[in-house]
Amino acid sequence: MVKAQKKEPILHGDVEQHGQITQGEWYLRSHRRDVYDSPKDVNIRTEFKEVISSLSAGAVAGAVAKTTIAPLDRTKIIFQTSNRLFSVKGAVDVLRQTYLENGLLGLFRGNSATMARIIPYASLQFTAHEQFKQLLRKDDKKGPLPPVRRFVAGSLAGITAAFFTYPLDMIRARLAITQKNRYTGLMHIVTKIYREEGFSAYYRGLLPTVMGIMPYAGISFFIYETLKNLYSDMFHEKKLNPLHRLLFGACAGLFGQSVTYPLDIIRRRMQTDGISGTSRPEYRKMLTTAKYVYATEGLRRGLYKGLSMNWVKGPIAVGISFTTFDLLHSFFQRHYIDTETS
Image (cartoon, rainbow, N blue to C red):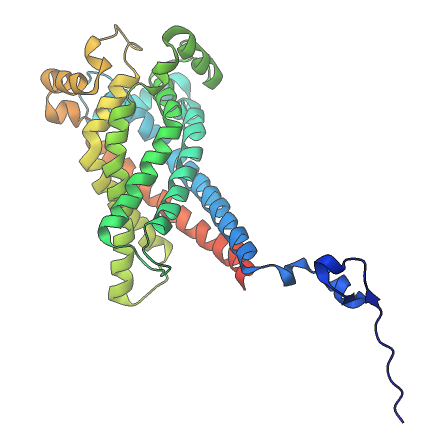
């Protein structure tokens, strides 16, 4: 005759919440809560991790890309905000003169403000782009968006990032064209602008920035995503190597910046008005700035001044930025997010 096993004692202390449960069941529930988590809880954690990974990958991508082309970016701003004629020789002379006068670090003057701007800007832009892509889907299917919604997602992401980080862009432009005796550092320029020009000065040139970022970000993200999809469809390869991403990002930057470049000239003139000379009333509004630059300097040497340098630095920056983001985001997806749903 087999002796009956002793039953595990029943716990009654939390009947209202758990009912009558055994001691073993209570231990599992108190020490392994993840077993009892609802799919909703898992989805919330996964979405949170998605946002954090996008923010982190975007910050690194922006910082790496902008630091790489910082000397060229500073040189471009110097030409954009002056009446000097642009040429490759002139750009090289500016780089050489800056190095002789201020050393290697002089080539990166204003980069601290650039980092203060680009890290939140790139974080917001890439994260917003991922979120807008999800919002613009009509169903839960994955895969590429239709072309129009792909463009809209990029434009909205650019506007979101530009609006929240614009004052730092204006500060970066002023640091790039001035010497240390005018602004000694980031905190000094922030306080000095506020004391001398008021809070509205931080947003001078915002309108052309928003008007420029809409097509620029839209075109850049649209071309980059489209080229990736075309390559995958043509060669039946879902996994792209870094070189492919770099080339597709370079093409996206080339087209995006070429289309919107005059608006970049306009916003730089508005941002830096009065810094290197007498303030001009024409630079107070977007339309009058465009008319004045065109009337005094023309189209090629005015509104498109420095475009050839942008064809060098722009594709490099955008290519590095998109590539770095994709690689880091994929890494976080594999090692940090997929473990939540597996």
